[in-house]
Image 1: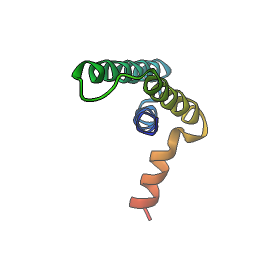
Image 2: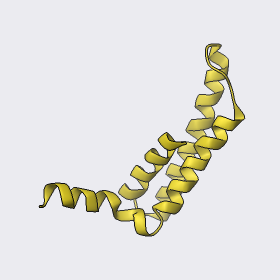
Image 3: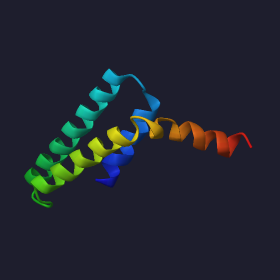
Image 4: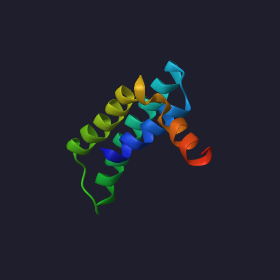
Length: 84
């Protein structure tokens, strides 16, 4: 969940267009599902619906966090580090 939260948070802060954010959210959800299916086919790791749900939850939480106050977190961090 944390990895997908970080991925979606990152891209949601880079792209503020609502439609672009929806596309990225759908892409990351599809990525999580696809990787889980491939893991099940590989025979080394296991296919689990709970992992798909966790990945999707990470994406959804990131969308909610970056919707308002968290949308400029990367900009504020960059300003603090490089523009002292």
